[in-house]
Length: 187
Image (cartoon, rainbow, N blue to C red; front, side, top):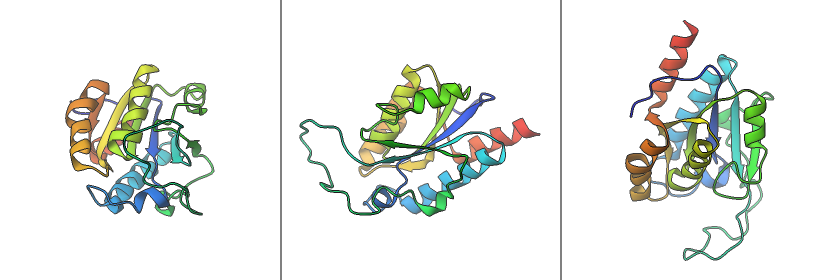
């Protein structure tokens, strides 16, 4: 499904574009993902729309078949990449789960600011982005996913999310699609 519209109060949610995550090997260059996400952040800020920058600084307890990639996070690992040009008006969320809504203030903050739709980007497509999109949909937000502003450590997982999961959670498109819709609203 293509991106058809953006609600008057749409927020950009950027998942885990932080120094430790972008340094991991990924299916697509993280430099391009960061570039696309930064363009979206600039476009949202330029129209007075909310930007939420999410980082991960831990993991939930419990057993998994695949051990965590990193046991102890080194200094600076959770720092957001400077290319995002974090602004005082941006809302920052630190999570310790895959999704950005679990045990954070994200839902309350978005609803308190009248947000009805989220555009989600970041790393990784099949974990942080997908978990956040699932929760957003379950919480009643309209969901848009800019698929050229995300990647995964596993190319098959990335493609599965984009082809089979995201169309059931919302609309998908490109950074350009979203920016063009923002521009049409401003015209």
